[in-house]
Amino acid sequence: MGIVNVNDDSFSADGSLEKDVLVALIRQQIAQGADVIDIGAESARTNRAAIEVEEELRRFRLVMGMWQEIWQACEPIDAQQVWPPVLSANTWRPEVVRGVLELGAEWVNDMSGLPDAQNARLCADAGAALLIMHSVGEPKVPHFHQQWDDVMASMLRFFEEKIALAEAAGLSRECLMLDPGIDFAKQKEDNLTVYRNLEQLTVFGRPLLVPVSRKTVIADVLGIADPRDRDAATIACLTWCMQRGGNVFRVHNVEAASQVVRCFCD
Image (cartoon, rainbow, N blue to C red; front, side, top):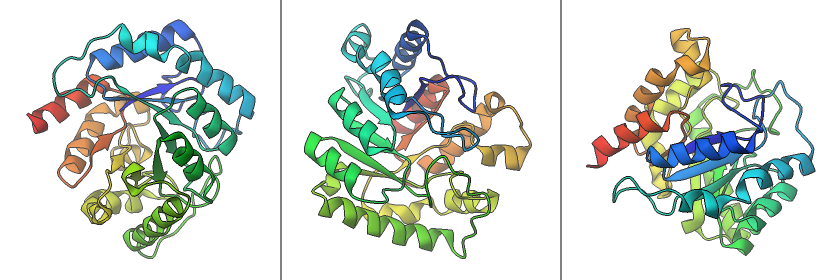
């Protein structure tokens, strides 16, 4: 899953509001083997206020309105690549979720932790998939002091409850993916515990998306301040998680990640 940030305040300084730059990035990621393009219009950084709903939708339209034109100008690099690539929208407010589904999003990458059934119901109505990310509290609010007695046990209960909530809203279990929410309401040791015990989440029988790319936990362990210098460690985390049940990896450096995945899948 290639990350495309339609903003100018991404933590890894790789976002843009220029259409030509974004289109070129998407085509580059597809050419490097991306199976999914994940478009986000708002930085998840907690030291930034949430942007207005209409501004977020405007940013999504900038790129999603050209999606067919973008991918049709590309070719798959091999028979393993998902084709056409899947279009994912990284958002969480129901007003925006409704809008991106109307723009053609095939799955919603929701960092809200599904506090209610609204986004699940919207995805069910649109025939789209939904990713449920583990976290606590509202997005865009720092949770630096969250403490877990047993982060894995809490996560297992969380996903059991949220899957039931989504199914009650009419969304098939087959349309659900799970995300352990690395760095979200988790401290260094929590994140490392999740990595070490990721296979526990396979009990739900749903694909696991692991957002490994350039995470703060890498800085916590290795002291690498600049996110753009964390790609080698990102690949190490990806490789580890592939061996423990991870299925989809959300990354900035698609070329490196694609090479690793193809080595394992060949």
